[in-house]
Amino acid sequence: MKIAAHPGMLAVALAAMVLTSPASAATPTADQAQVAGVYRQAIGPWRVTALFDGIVALPRQQLLGIETGRMARLLERGFVPEDATGLQTAVNAYLVRRGGDLVLVDTGTADCFGPGLGQVLANVHAAGIDPATVDHVLLTHAHPDHLCGLLDARGQAAYPNATVWLSQADAGYWLDPASEAGAPAMLRPAFPLARRAVAPYAAAGRLHRFGPDDPLPGGARALDSHGHTPGHVSYLFDDGQGDALLVWGDIVHYHAVQFARPEASFEADSDRGAAIASRRALLAQAAARRWWVAGAHLPFPGLGHVREESEGYAWVPGEFAPLPAAH
Image 1 (cartoon, helix red, strand yellow):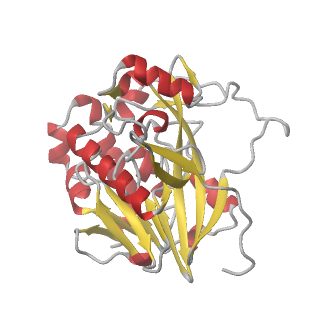
Image 2 (image 1 turned 135 degrees about the horizontal axis):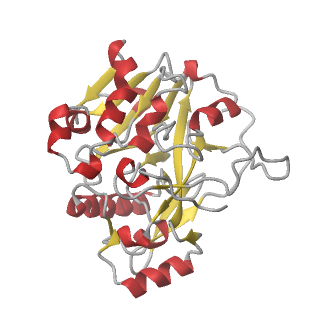
């Protein structure tokens, strides 16, 4: 797949994400079309559905805090596809079902980044799920590739019966026009996108700004993982009996580098020191407690485990497995 640059993408994508799209805009033939971006995994009492939104290109120049030669060796070792616009990087969202509760964590880009992305809602349908049955949407943070998918192609609520949950810290920053006025010019396009995305839910009284001690739906617990944004959180689903899933949002962007070298930071992080600390903490916990991990920018489906190495960590993708007959 060819990765193509898109005009104005760096501003909208917070100085890092470049639109990727197929080499041809023509309708693909049967042998050119990829399968639906849907993958299901049974984890303890949960049925997890990974949803592919598309790919973006992250320039290696946006990766800081690591020597250039070492970065190059890690990228080469990881066989990460790359062209002149950057490194191929997935955008994923996750449906988590337990019993009758259906929770969506993040929503993808919708129309915020142009063609080539915005596939989450179509993949919800491809998974055989009516978006109206989604009870809650948990947002890890308010960047466009995580919340623009709250809207459908008409600009209406894509999940009309869902309550949207966003941390107080991120809501207080990204939804406040005063923050926009004081933000770097490069970031300002993200503020109106965030306000537009949440508007129909706020108007219906279904936007909930939650604090660190507030109970969350679906048995989720918010873990403070700020740094990428002021109020970035990761969601832990833990049944207390040994099964747990951590949906960690943007803890890792450059998987081939940042597992091995957690101190390598992303230029788009709002607080790089805090982002590094959050990454180190969650990598250590996930490895020690053998949690399942779901990552927004890990290779689709982005489900697997973290393994501790002699130096740093490694990503262990989950094995393909059939679903149990009843779950």
